[in-house]
Length: 116
Image (cartoon, rainbow, N blue to C red; front, top):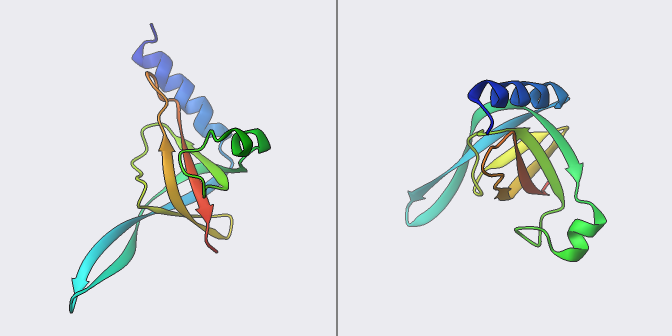
């Protein structure tokens, strides 16, 4: 069984290995004159690593969403949802899924689709 101290040390090592920075944008839906309007507000900045999905992940269908084209790794237990966006390395990405890593989450892997 891992102790809280063990988990904290493992998370610290992982965080040091994330060379990039990502901004998580949280979506809000509002109703203006009968139309739903989506807006995004910056929710926080976290260390991150952007990786294209490997061929075998695409071919085997290991993705949560078939439109995902990349993975972004962020520190474990970071608040992020499938309606959020991430900006990183000059690109903007829609979150298409968040992979669960249980029972001990050291990192959080987020499936994304590049939109710009």
